Each structure stands twice: as C-alpha cells, then as structure tokens.
Image (cartoon, rainbow, N blue to C red; front, side):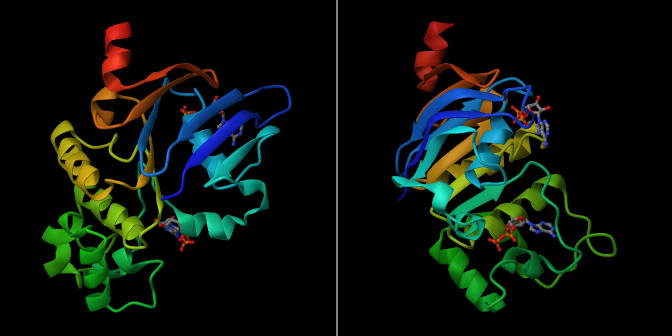
Amino acid sequence: QPSIAFENISFGYDEDRQILNDLSFEVPAGSHVAIVGPSGAGKSTIARLLFRFYDPLSGRILIDGQDIAGVTQESLRAAIGIVPQDSVLFNDTIGYNIAYGREDASEDEIVAAARDSAILPFIDSLTDRFDTEVGERGLKLSGGEKQRVAIARTLVKNPPILVLDEATSALDTRTEQDILQTLDRVSANRTTLAIAHRLSTIANADRILVLDHGRLAESGTHAELLTRD
Ligand code: ADP
Ligand code: ADP
C-alpha cells in the first residue's frame, strides 16, 4: 500500500488569493485519513492537486515517497480511485457503468473481479440487473443505488489509493450509514483519504484533519478531537 504526504504545500487558483497555506500532512500506507472543515476551506483542492489537475506553487506531494511532479496524470488516475459526491452514470446498462474503465473485461470477469476486490457487497443487489439500462430512457436509480454503482466502478479497478470526496453527503442518513458500513469493509487496509463535512461520516478514520482557510486547524483521532472541544 502506498502512503501519501503533502509537504509544505501552498496553492492558489489566482495569484492574489492563497487557498492552501504551507499545508503538511501524511496518510500512512493503508490508513484512513479524513479531512473535515467548512465549505471553501480547500478540501476538494487537495484532491485536485493529488491528480495534478493543478500543481502546487510550493511544496511537494509524495506518493509512496515519490514526488508526483514527475508523474503523469494518467498514472495518477490509475493509482487513485475517486468517488465524487454526485456521480454521473452513463445512459447505458448497470454492467457497462460498473465495467467502465475495464472495457477489456466481460460481465463474468467484472463479477469475478468484484469478488476478488471484495466489492460485491456494493453491487449484490444489482448483479441480477446488470443488463438493465439506467438513465434518461432506462431505470431511474435511487441516489444510493447510483453511488453504489459509482463506488463499484471505482473499486473494480482495485486502485491502491481511494479518495472519497463527499461521497455520501448527498444521501439520506440511513442510506449514507449503509454505504459507509460497506465502504469500511471494502476499504480496510487501502490507503484512503476521505473528504467530509460531518464528523458522523468518518467515525472510522484513523486520523482526522480539520482544515480551515487552507491550514490545519487541528488533527487527531476521533476521540482526541472530541475531548478537546
Ligand atoms: P472545499 O472543498 O473545502 O469546500 P474547495 O477546495 O472546493 O473547498 O475550494 C476552496 C476555495 O477555492 C473556495 O473559496 C473556492 O471558491 C475556490 N475555488 C475552487 N475552485 C476554484 C477555481 N477553479 N478557480 C478559482 N477558485 C476556485
Ligand atoms: P480512468 O483513467 O481510470 O479510466 P477516468 O479518468 O477516465 O478513469 O475517469 C475517472 C472517473 O471519472 C471514472 O471512474 C468515472 O467514474 C468518472 N468519469 C469519467 N468520465 C465520465 C463521464 N463521461 N461521465 C461520467 N463519469 C465519468
């Protein structure tokens, strides 16, 4: 499992406004780190830098000790699976949506890969509907089902690093808890960076970073942060 390290990262989209200020943190190999903080704090910007959609103004980002400044976006996308808040599915079958990015694989192979990477719990209820069309002219999936398909699509590629960017925050509490429980099971021992705005969604993070105005306001375990308040 790779580790992630941000070392003294500063970044702004415009010259006159700094979004991240000398930010340093680590996600140790195989651990779960959550970033929380108010809207606009710079959380999603961290994810964008990790994929090199932008490069930092100063500082280094290391994956497994290697500076990503020398790594292509393509290799980064292969190494990092991301689940956004509002996943967009293709107007195609559920199977196609899950297999997207694994066009080489047949449906049987996808199910087999799903078993291997232990993502089956996500798509269990959907496997008998692999041939069902979704989207505008097909079946309307619920928000939760959509996110399950999106998460399966990401995990089926078995990325060593998982980034969850508010992956469940658009869902109702019950669906959210359901998906979070499954996520906990499948992401065990996978280097995971979860972006969230509610503490209840990151109960199982090994470490929580509280971001405010692009700086680390606090960090610690769930218990440590609760006792400090
Ligand atoms: P968070 O995820 O914590 O809500 P973001 O990282 O999305 O915050 O955004 C941090 C700040 O950067 C916000 O003030 C936002 O308006 C600004 N921002 C985000 N994307 C861009 C962009 N492409 N161009 C200019 N400013 C941006
Ligand atoms: P990869 O390089 O691993 O094949 P991409 O960079 O093409 O992945 O896509 C990254 C993620 O973005 C995919 O897992 C998929 O969820 C989503 N995605 C990419 N293109 C689209 C699209 N046209 N519509 C909806 N989601 C997309």
